[in-house]
Length: 289
Image (tube, rainbow, N blue to C red; front, side, top):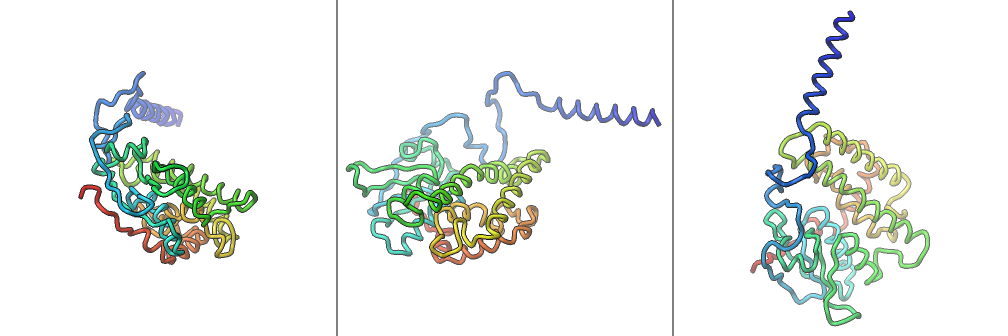
């Protein structure tokens, strides 16, 4: 019996040694090979423009440069909800930034977003000066627009505003684990790897459980009345709502999203809004005419 135990331990040690020896990080990292994956051809460890580009500018007060990914859909929803209300000054032109083709690294786009990520927005009609204002990061864009037009965000200091901003920041901090973590390793990595998939699946399910427990007692993220629907719902729905509705990564069964019945109820309710229906399939004009 002792021999068997010793053999088993020895085998386990060999297995561990082999796994550990598979990759040892160098003292200094350099990009000396293609790491594979869907976006391997455009990923680099440097920022800035890679080619000259002039972005088109339409006649509307707001110019949106984006893509209908979850981060882009967030802003689409708010703009379409403002359009649904007929808010003056919230008219917009929307242009497609194809991230698979590297449009985000064109000089025109980098000028308005040095981080080269969609979405980016330019406000050409404001009170500060004649020069347009560029805003990047989806959360910043949504807060800017909601506060500018006084819609879909509580403006007065107090619990309602604190709740809204807390959930907006929750989404901004949490979604990278869902998209860049779970989504990347489950759907886009060149090969399936057990450890990162398990790691990010666990975190994604924990986040869904956070939402499910909260939405058990809330119709919307910040309350139960239709008037409580705000940018917190929009920004979270674009990622987690679409996820539980089976729209992201073909992962609904894998994540057992039916466990999160309160999230699904909330997600289905928001998905029925006319503005949201338009937002998920928003028509985007090409930047190269």
